[in-house]
Length: 481
Image 1 (cartoon, rainbow, N blue to C red):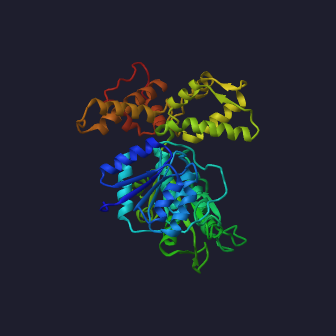
Image 2 (cartoon, rainbow, N blue to C red):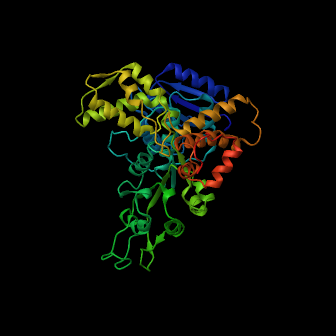
Image 3 (spheres, one colour):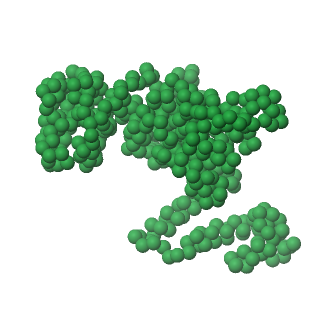
């Protein structure tokens, strides 16, 4: 802590001024508080204070407008911005104006004191003011603590060219985050090019990314422009990076290491100036262990990891998301709808295996199909009663195998209290799954072990051994051949 540091606070809420005064006073700081921008400016112009904490909304002037004035006369004075307008644009604007940190209200006092200590210990810094795009559309919605942390990280990254790895389940908004990093960053005037690795045939990935020369392969009658060339000076978003073939991974690693690439069939290295953002919903470490993903590429891409929370971890954001999707549906010409309070509770209780994308599709569907102006909870419950998934289908709804196993393991571990369960849980869980699975397949094939083995994808001898080891009984009187 800087000795005898003075903290200047501007907030029109007297309760917040009192709380901050007490918390920072206990931490050993001298604190001055005011309810206006004018009061704060007088202290700053007189050279007082070692750090500023200001709200965005002040009765006489916006805190955002005040920051550039402060930076002109005292560029090394750290500024913390508070705001109840907890949106991505608020966080980005605070960073662009030169604030040291953005603190969404309500905030944790312990965290506030830590941020103050970090700001006072850091050397003075200035940031080139870059006007944000004149776009009132919010690329990301949510006021939950999890989303506030995402906003703060994005705000820090917009003025850098660091490679970012976005991790999250399908439907959490990975491409929206990538677009926000581009649209509010210093490459905003370049192209944003998105490529989904899972949607491109493996034999065409290298040509798609790096382009090809005429005659490089059968059908290459002309020179082809790759996505790197299209994104020159801008951002290349590589979605589902875990599906990239190993050969293309090697080429991508060279780009990250040397800043150059060669086209398919070409020999001359081409210099490139592209920011790369990758995304995945898969466990890349597991793919590395399986030999399907290069470990050196993983570390090159994972410079700044950013995990997006699934919707079930931020259900408090559902009302804001619903209002946003209803307004969006209305702007597209769909009927104006509202939701009952009970409807929101029904939405909060759902597990949302498809995350935000599933919620948006549900709201759009209800806006079209429901005849009334207000959508009741019963209509939502009926829509959310999905049929059981086919075995092996992606997702984790109430009927999915993964959800059942997850619930089983959670209850099992909770039953142990603070102690870990005995060793061997892997085999015990597999036995719990194998026993009913094999029994059901035997019943479905009327005891025919050959057909059951084919259904299970097992060798017949392997199936026989499992039947014996698990102590299963084959129905007498039915053929085993």
